[in-house]
Length: 353
Ligand SMILES: Nc1ncnc2c1ncn2[C@@H]1O[C@H](COP(=O)(O)OP(=O)(O)OP(=O)(O)O)[C@@H](O)[C@H]1O
Ligand SMILES: [Mg+2]
Image 1 (cartoon, rainbow, N blue to C red):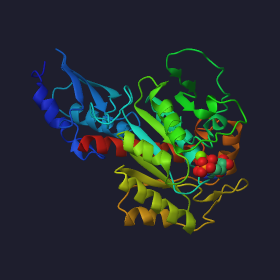
Image 2: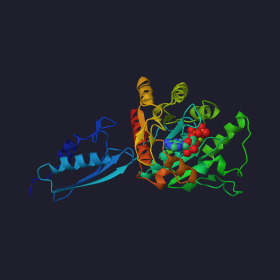
Image 3: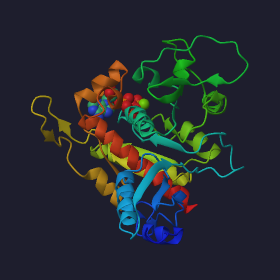
Image 4: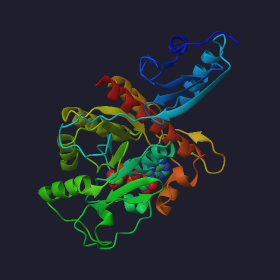
């Protein structure tokens, strides 16, 4: 029998594995849990990452396993991969919502650039990695989440307790569109809107969420201000399209978030290029690289490009988002990659605090 291994030898070897986002080794990040060495020198431990959406999880696990196997005397290695999402919210700060660890708002200065499409697919893509995710439709005057998820208004309930969020495609959802009869417009002034938003945030039973994705209305107005001023947000994701006008307005949205002291987690470009239905060729019909350039000028992470394709529009209209109806398509993969990058930015931010 080889000499008995000790924990220090194992941990020293594991110090060579770095989390590429957090830029620290996994031992100093305290990611190694339940390290056990059996009497036959079999090593087992749990690698606890900061998000189940971590794009490097497979690679880090592989690297860790290889390094431990190379230690003389080790007979076998077993690594469990788990995650514990950290929270942006510090106890007793602002009016945080109990049980919700991170709130990510999705906005842009301009209407129709795809905020709702991105919000829905981002929330689903995050949940598909194993995270607990909620989606709040904060577009009080023009809610579109019920349609995108083919949800009908809830029946009137007379309970005095909290409003139940609706569970759909693995995420918890709430929208004013679920509380009002269909085809009724909301005609309210600012203060009512503010009140309704607070109802949707505080009087809905969201359960325990790693991430609450918030679909914002277009513009830089009341809803954005209410959310940024009342809650400690993990940050904002800005959606733009490649056309010059859209980018100019996206820049204004970034400026607004910064003025409201809401960190910008990154900017993404929707409708970046067209995928031909017949030959699947890519065509950058609105030009290429403009959003990425803005991200560089603003020193804000570029989160990725989403193609303009009829499948995204069609699946949205059907109420079965592309991340559910065709998760292996190019469109769905774009959302999955963006979701990973956003969760990484949230982890980085939470570790800095
Ligand atoms: N990548 C895409 N490819 C094809 N169609 C898309 C894409 N993204 C969004 N769309 C379509 O564009 C329209 C507008 O999208 P969406 O409602 O998500 O935008 P929005 O920014 O939320 O709009 P609003 O400002 O009105 O809230 C919808 O019909 C949607 O299906
Ligand atoms: Mg919208």
